[in-house]
Image 1 (spheres, rainbow, N blue to C red):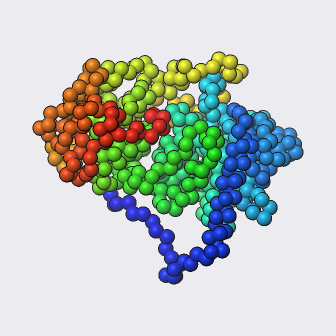
Image 2 (image 1 turned 60 degrees about the vertical axis):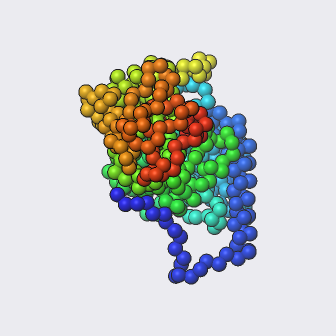
Image 3 (image 1 turned 180 degrees about the horizontal axis):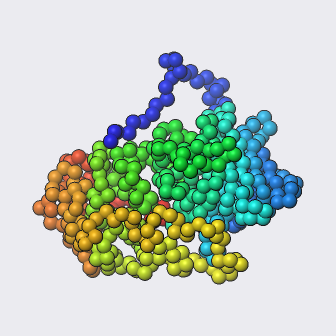
Length: 502
């Protein structure tokens, strides 16, 4: 596994790039225009509800079922999605004050009684979406395309179509002829090479067995009609500096456009991911992995500390640091699915942290009605409980469809003690790699592991933090470096990102 190397911009023909005052002013003008357009779109589309489309900023055209084309003519216009046959947004054109932005909120296969849980769909710059589901059909099957041109200003985002599904719910779409399961924020762009580029900034995307985790892009060949050629996916590409710059605009959207912040992976996250096996990344719950990346930073791990890390190692590390993960039923389900926990370990952890096993099972099996029971509103019930195009509600991440990992990474008869002692990741320098004791039954965190090295060497977590997860912090003088998470409470330093947990 090679180290991740940041890509630097090469200077053309070895000459230095000279930025004049005039060009700098032009860049500022472009950036100001983008901020103005995005803010105006946010204000225009604030009232957009489920299964509605909004004309966000100047430069949007649409055709309706039956050919009507004069109903979507000005920013702020809102119409029903099932009325639309196609939507087109125009490229950046400062002289005409145009930069087409359209916003759609879709139900997809989300239960109709779950309020506020929509798929947000943003077209920006030169892009088109054609409803491929037939006259009056909901927008679950569509063909998208983006223009190949690049805006004349670097501060203007590239043409794109972005979908953000609700966290903890996997939604199904047919996009350019291929089935997609989306549990994240994903951006699509048509490329000059005739491919569709799919970039995941949050969570995970899956299409017929092809996985695209957060921090990665994959390209796939399109046929002459713009449909995906199923066996023509290319290898995953980890985000580089240019990718982060290209997608930066997602963090600049005004509040309430997206249901949650579209946080891009940090450069530190990318460095960590570069040292991990892609298949391992693909097997893990994306939000659990996000929390572990945060924890690696809290422990001051270096990227090379992760070289050769296995799923077993990450499982041990996770159980040793449960106190730092703000554990709830959703996250326990994610841990169970990612690492194939046995029933004894699940019961021990649930008892120690006062968790409801039935609720954990609901999250594990995508039983939305049980998992989100407190949020359901019967008054929102549609004629059908939810729109269904025949796609599997389980989203396809678990081929066995029984809520377990596809290939349990541990011995089927392994006990909690055997599981917790199976790796050495908790201490890359000293100790025997054991995981310490299982979480105590009283939920209080218990005493820290003994200081004889059994938990992986180094010092125990701070006394005031309740180290119920067991294990010891990486040593101050070792390969991972740094101090353990701050001793300001049971959570150990800052809380992991509020990303939904599972």
